[in-house]
Image 1 (cartoon, rainbow, N blue to C red):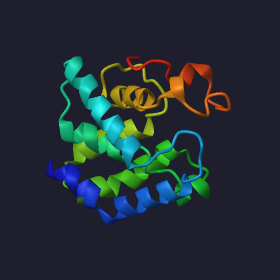
Image 2 (cartoon, one colour; image 1 turned 30 degrees about the vertical axis):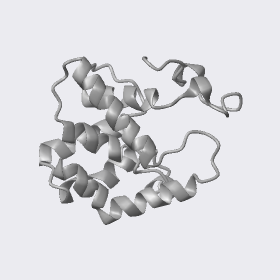
Image 3 (cartoon, one colour; image 1 turned 60 degrees about the horizontal axis):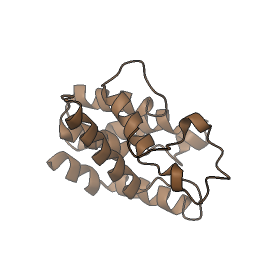
Image 4 (cartoon, rainbow, N blue to C red; image 1 turned 90 degrees about the vertical axis):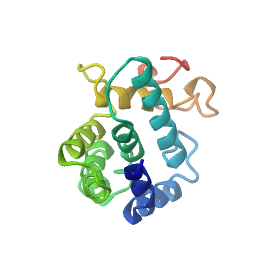
Length: 161
């Protein structure tokens, strides 16, 4: 699990996470800090285990820890890029520094860029990341659920699907 520890100790990752946490401190809707990223990682890994999807734990955790890293970046703000695409670009050098192989970097960055939409390709890293991200949200008991702007189809109304 050296690569995961490398991500957590990466200066750019730490700086980006601090920016995200600071930017969302007063946000009443879903927040995107380390707690959320770890929940996504753990849920994604459970999905992979339960469904016998052969993905390396370090790939799953790497994707989950970095899936929201594009939030509040200059790419998102100035380039008007979605945080998913900005995240894929921002994650690439972090993954390389942390020891991921080129093909793993490509796989993870592709999944990050697609994590906001359900893909047609089931049981892929992108599919697992999407499902875990949604399951990590407790919309069914959120204090802000009456004010939430998410489409009803995107809200998590169960702990199992």
